[in-house]
Length: 182
Ligand SMILES: C[S@@+](CC[C@H](N)C(=O)[O-])C[C@H]1O[C@@H](n2cnc3c(N)ncnc32)[C@H](O)[C@@H]1O
Image (cartoon, rainbow, N blue to C red; front, side, top):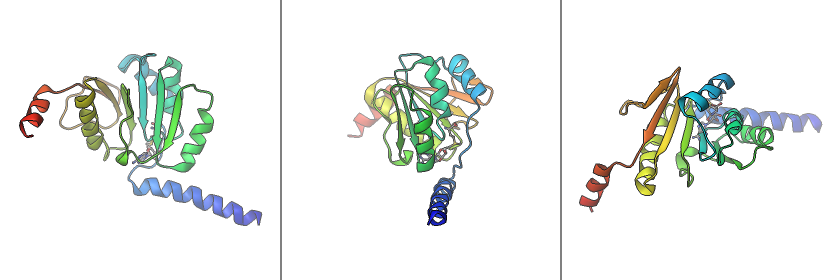
């Protein structure tokens, strides 16, 4: 009986990891030291910020970010096993939510000021579109921190090591074009 339960648990964990590989993004955590530099020198995180980690893995990004006491921390993660682990590891961090969600079918949460992404290169162009759409609607800027991958159609505001920082602001010409097409 115990062996059967163990086999079921191991199969579920393996299946969860294979699922994320199928989606093109296996789990690989960011390095703590690089994250510390990113949240101090690249984009100094402050209590005014709401940070979203797209594909939050084991929650390392949220844990390092929590030292800056941001207003809110949100992780979206596809792999239920990693959601479980990260919820345990982040349980003492206030105002933190880790959702078992596919980012492809999700909206950017209200009030998000900065988004972190690592390893999901196929998602980055879709993410950039979502950010621009959100910024057009709210009129408030959103920063994007991308590790290792860059946007081909946009210049980064800053570059530090393997990090690229982008600032998305409302584009008036885009709003005018949209209203002319109505
Ligand atoms: C390279 S890891 C990065 C983990 C974490 N952000 C970090 O920097 O340590 C990418 C994570 O994204 C998750 N993932 C892949 N596709 C996803 C999707 N469509 N929505 C949400 N999470 C996804 C994977 O399960 C994996 O844990």
